[in-house]
Structure formats: structure tokens, C-alpha cells
Image (cartoon, rainbow, N blue to C red; front, side, top):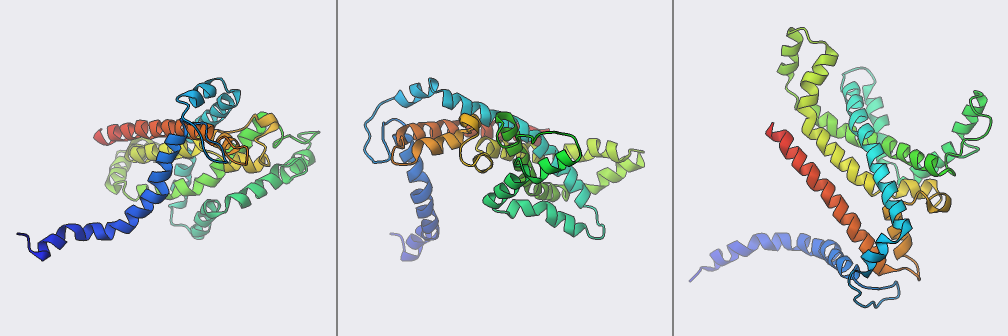
Length: 296
């Protein structure tokens, strides 16, 4: 027969974990399972819903809005990942140097990370508006005769939102690179310098190979965040998703479909399930690449 001390020994850790597990189950697991169930129903914002099998997914294949949103989210991912992998690394190399006043530049690059998405959207809307600072400067320099439609043209609006995403993400990924640069062996740099390698050659021969797993991680994080873009396009377009909704992203389509009294919760859940599968696929591919880099 077990003594009371031995009996209490096995469940004591679970008592400490119980509050955290309850929060995860209540606010993550239950809504996730509910989303999967709703994806196979015709549920609306007013409740109810009957099981409809794969009807929502068949509707998705014939929905032009879905394909436009998928195109925009995919294009967003492809365009923002390369600059968000390279530029923060270069900035981290610059601000890592111990120079007078370098702390100011580190803070300046990190400030957009902690800024509210609404504030960022308002700032860039003011900058890129037809009467905004950028257009006024371009006209003052004589480079354009009419305002550039940064916020009203289908493609210019999408690329303006990408610019905001890159600008806002530079500081966050810079911090990740700064932490990783601290683990690059200094003796390798010294050995390469003794062999006559210059700064550029040492960067590609020593720094880049050492940071390759971190670069894969940054690519994964920026890819997932880029594919789930919402606030940048929403704020720059004033919530409309661009002219005729041409710049709507997948998350914006989910928001537009599933909210309001006429919201189609079942279809929005099916869209959310597709978004989850794609982002999970991106993470699995990245995880595989990261393991391969670590094995080299």
C-alpha cells in the first residue's frame, strides 16, 4: 500500500500545471475544436447550423474572393521574407559596434516594434496620402506632376502595406540576430583575419554559416506573419481591402465573412481551417530545413 507521501508525490506537479492547462484548454483548444466543427456546417452569426459536409470547401474553390485573398497573402509572403531576413542582419551588424550614441540607433530601430498597429497605420496613412508628406516631397522635387496613388491603386496599396510590415519588423528581427551574433565564435573571425580575409569575406565565410539556423527561423516567423497579414492592409485601405476589395488578404476575408449579423460563421471557419493548414505546412517545412542546417 502506498504511503500518503508517495501518493501525493505524483499529482503534486499536476496541481501546479492545472491553472495553466485550464487556460490553454479554455481559450485555445476548445475554440480550435469548435472552429473545425463549424467548418463543416452552415452556421451563421445568429447560431445554429446544420452539418453540410464539404460544402464550404467546395464553395471556396468557386469563390473568386478566396483566390484573390490567397494570391495577395502568398505574394505578401514572397515579397517580405527576403528583406526581413537580410536587412535586420545588416542592421544588427551595424548597431553591434560599440560606438558613442549607438544605443540611440538601437532604440530607434526597435521603437516601431512596440508601437501600436493603429498608430503605425495612422502615421503611414498620413505619409502616403495623396496630400501626404511623400507626395508633397515628390511634387516639390518635380519628380511627379500628380499625386502617386499609394493608397488607392490596387498594387501600390499592397506594396505600401508590405513596406510598413518590413519597417515594423526590422527591430524585432534585429534583436534575434543580435542575440545570435553573440554566439558566433570570435576565434573563427580571428583565424580568418590572420589568413588575410577582409570584412566581406569573413561575413560570408564565418558569420553567415554560423547564423544560418537563425536566418531559417527568421524566415519562418516572417513568412507566417506575412501570410496572416491583416492590420497593415486594413488600416491603409480604411477597412475596405483596397479598390473593389482587390487587396483583401486571407485573414481580412475571414473577418469580413464571419462578422456582423449576416456573418457566415461556417464558411469563415472553413477559411480559417485552410489558413491553419497552410501556416502549419510553412512551419513544418521550416522545421525540416532547420534540422538539416543543424545537422551540417
